[in-house]
Image 1: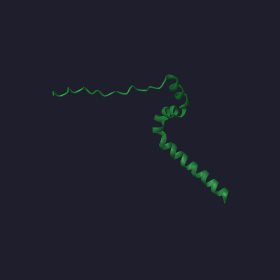
Image 2: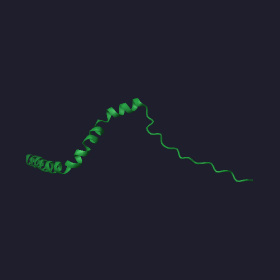
Image 3: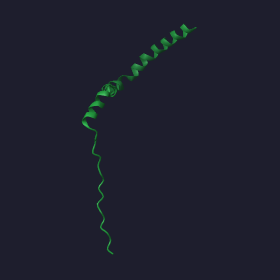
Length: 71
């Protein structure tokens, strides 16, 4: 019996996003936080250090006022 010829195995490539257009439109409208995060990403990478350095003392002052008010 002769050997069987080997079949070419082709890998199926993913076809991308298969969701309908109306579903993608709804998701894009509901993902406001994600869009805002993408827009602010570059700015946040440059300003995260100064932002934390400014907010930390303010939070400590608020905590001090709360502790003294509870005494």
